[in-house]
Image 1 (cartoon, protein in one colour):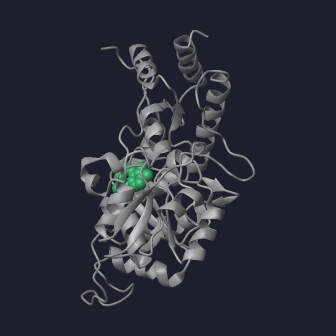
Image 2: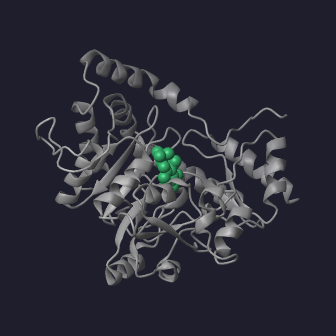
Image 3: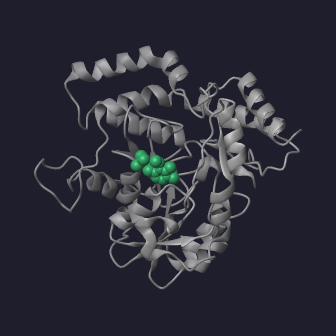
Amino acid sequence: MTATKIPLLSLKKQQQKIGEQLRRAALRVLDSGVFIMGPEVKAFETEFAAALGSRFAMGVSNGTDALRVALEACGVGPGDEVVVPSFTFIATATAVSAVGAKPVFADVDERTLTITAQTVRKALTPRTKAVIPVHLFGQPVDMDPLLKLAREKGLAVVEDCAQAHLTAYKGRTVGTIGDCGAFSFYPSKNLGAAGDAGAVLAQDEKRAELCRQLRNCGRETGGPAYRHVRVGQNCRLDELQAAMLRVKLAHLREWTDARRAAAGRYLDGLKGLPLRLPELGSGGDKHTFHLFVVRCQRRDELAKHLSERGIGNGVYYPIPIHRQPAYEKLAPKAGSLPVTEAACATALALPLFPELAPAEIDEVCAAVREFFGK
Ligand SMILES: Cc1ncc(COP(=O)(O)O)c(C=O)c1O
């Protein structure tokens, strides 16, 4: 096997740069003796909301719980249907199942690889209660037509922003556009903790308090310790993770700019090849490139060619959710999600992380060009 020269993702350089700050923050928490629902979580929630232009942010234990809490806070429960893409990480659908509702799969758009008002409309039934637009890979969903449809049909909109920290749609930060935004801080995400973590954004005060209760065993904020006003779960963000996130949040803008600069260099370097390329975004739209995903008809051959040259690559996602054994029973009829199926057969992620050097990007582009004999 060839040793990896340019990894798909590496956190090493980031750790070298901010390791000391992280260690100091971790020690601050350890020395404080406060580990749950203390000042770090409170400060992170304030800072994260401010960075994204949100009224409220509520820390939770991971991105899946963020989606689950958001859905529950929007009144989604047993007997309801929620429209989701099938071309996404499985948590988008499992969060729906976790609240007792049924995920219904909509196809994605050929250009953005995200659901649209048109594809969602086809999946609506009288039981549809909500829709989850996923800003996949950092690409914003076309939200305006989707919001219009949601308003017309009385649907809640929960944005899945697990891969889209600071992504913008027409100048607005995603996660602040729908009824709730759900974020993951899994370590490899654009903003990653030192373990599992997540957050929910809400703009409505009552809904924000509902999220706080749902993540904290059904307790009212500021209420007595053993009084529970609803059936909630324990899915709190902890102090250590909040402290790690505060250190990294201060770098998020700079890292996002670096991701976009790297993507821009790829777009130049890969021009003219038989590849479908992502777009940087214009008119206030801003892709934040959690992953740089190209589409190639000879995807598996290209992946092999790159791996043989020590260039990391990855398939996101090889199997659509509606074809997963876990969701066999909910599979729509064969051929009803053609763009999703095509994306799973052609999508390939190339190395991209903020510290990736321009020379490394050029080397990846040269290897891709070599593959096509150009
Ligand atoms: C699109 C999407 N939704 C939801 C999640 C779930 O987040 P977590 O792994 O933090 O539970 C992830 C990430 O893993 C994701 O990529």
